[in-house]
Length: 490
Image (cartoon, rainbow, N blue to C red; front, top):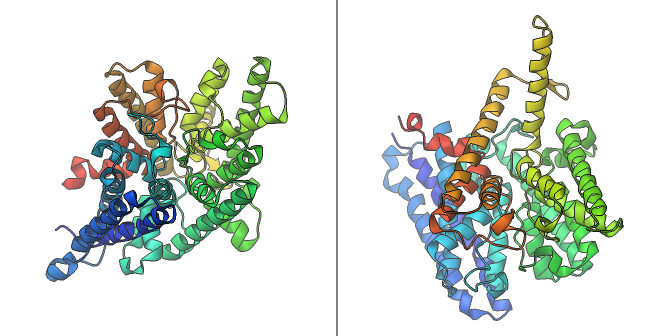
């Protein structure tokens, strides 16, 4: 029997989403951009009304209402919840007078909620700066909501969900390190969001004193901690032309892509255990190595001179792509070929599990390499008994199988979507990086979606499938694929 609790939970989600649209209307009043006030208010009302209709099904069908949520229910809520959120989040763009089609509005909305950062703005003479401050705020705020997950956010703030929170939390933070910090999932979600919001507020203050306006500092803090990459300017971070601002954002991008459990241990317990974590050590090493390689290649190619400024450009691009944030300071597709190749590789890796980043996640790549080393040892010493460990923990065979399956599934979807894009006579570099960018929730790529380009020129079907890949990447593939499988519905 269909669990009406699903509709009830989705209704709560939409009501909450509708309420979060209201601060955007305030910014239209503050900047006297009244033309976008009513579209935002109407979008909020439509969302709240639809959410209320779903919520009150519990009172209409009392006899069929079940309190418990199964794992299958959780998969449904997470996937359908993200889809509904993206649809209703697109209303402010669509109802405003910018002549944006619903597909374009939905693309921008999905890109925000999944923290991808790809944009259609810049095509058809509609640029980022053309939007009102209300819509610019909403655009960044969707990334703030998506950063730690709208579903987890709902669990943290709406205790009405009651039973079933654990299943929702597991579906939302799927991966090899989805352990809860505390036994109660609501308390866990509140702790994670407390740290998340704390970092956002801290970065907002620091950026403000570094020279940004309060509005810009708030919007860019939303995007930074969500590793989303939406900016209030077409030139992204290079618009501010400030080395101080760039170093601040480098630091916060690095923090955003670090496992939030480590932040909790440090902030809550005062224990600095970052470098005792295997994944963090690899993450830190990759960032340092890629930055140094970029710097060496840029200097020896006479693209830059050896200077602290060159290190900043290399470090910013490295951490921006590694963390799947996608902020831009330099047009890296004009760099030497080795640097471009490094940038392409960084599109896949992602940051740490348990963070707001996208991509494959470093913990999975680390586990794959350990598994390959394990297989080599087994070939040399067939009778030897070996275990795969990360840190001091032995990894179960089931987790290894799941990780291998995820890796293969990820590569398969990447290849398939690249072929689909190339079917529309789009060049190979654009096709490959668009696929990697959408699936990894990154935003910029190479070719026709380079650092200062946009996705608005793509055919409608490519945009639609791009949004699907964004959703797959944000929910780590299996959460979505389970829902559309035949076995699930049987």
